[in-house]
Figure (cartoon, rainbow, N blue to C red):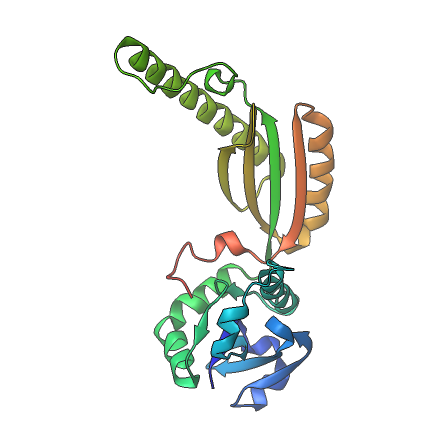
Length: 249
């Protein structure tokens, strides 16, 4: 039997699984293409899987709804997250048979259990912060360095200076967000977002018990930071913080 894998959870979170040595159906949750979800016992872990056929690989994305499989993958992980800390598998991960799945878990067992313990009782909040990018390189009319000579060197210097200015502003905003929200851990990326805009994509790891307090801080931040457009989502499984201390699932 070939398996499609969604995530790893703690076996103890599913008491009914403690009496089983073989995969057990998980009711009221369906996976990709409506397939039945199973809890696959592996030592003290439970691997959330569904049956996988080779033809499934050819219909991962459909023309009328290309993102649905990814959303279904995330939905199963989110449903499992209600019961246990989870270690998500990347979308599209599958195992040829029971033995292949067991070997993968056994070879990384200590990493998995340590990370599940580290993420116990924690959740991820996701902030998108859009701000004006006032760096010179973002302003209309600045030509890119396509020639040689003095103009080329001048453009290189201006571009490098603008990049340093952008990075400095992003770091300052990141520090400001950290002081406001006080996350346990964070992961931040910054990129240009259209003409004259800069986007900070911020993932914060927080205590699950503090979600409401975090949401209240977000309301305060949106009132105080008038020059920013902010968007909040979560709580999510801690996708950004799973792979920091161990190899990928």
